[in-house]
Image 1 (spheres, rainbow, N blue to C red):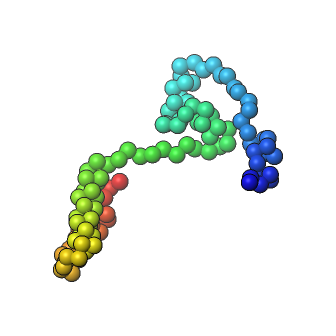
Image 2: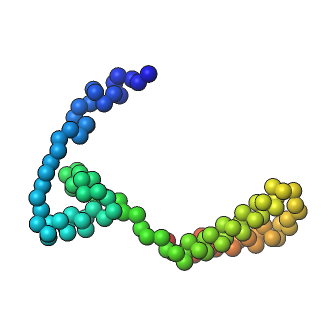
Image 3: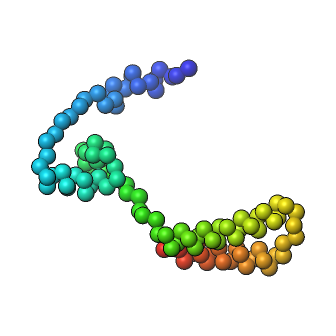
Length: 109
């Protein structure tokens, strides 16, 4: 059962019931699109009204992704051996962990 104090019905000022229609020229539209990034235009306008900035997600650095994937795969192989009851030398584990750590520290995300 929902608590009536947390219900949307008791907070009408938080509900978005009002529709706003705006006409923009091409420069204004391009400015709005530059500000919004990958967010919806309506969300970007809300950010502007609240003096907030939309958070952008950076593009993936494919080289760093590849290096981290290789290191993670090596860790997964060690984990599989250990979970399967195979004997794995401590030096092998140490080497892979050092390589993984170095890859993480060197990753330019």
